[in-house]
Length: 102
Image (cartoon, rainbow, N blue to C red; front, top):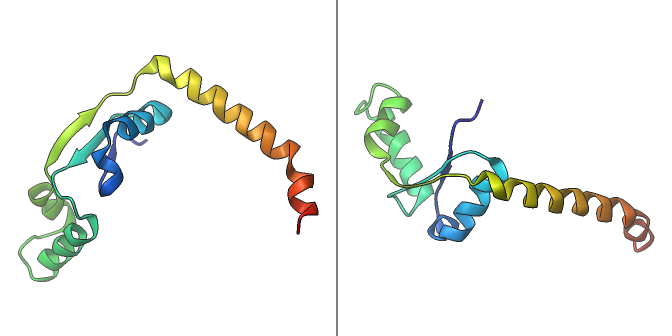
């Protein structure tokens, strides 16, 4: 079971977007201090390969620092669920139109 979401990169700078993701998933979302996810991942793997860390978990524990935590708002979950149900209905209703345009 997923206990938290980690968000990195440009989108993680938006408090609104972080709240939306936490609310939709109903799971706490954490942002980390590293602005470059790819560079951080490469450094973690390099540290493991070079023997600096005994395993990936140790590398993550030592190199990844949580900057902020966004708690999901349960009252928003219903709004997103209703919107998703409407999206699925509209998508199914328009399937014939999509296929006709090909």
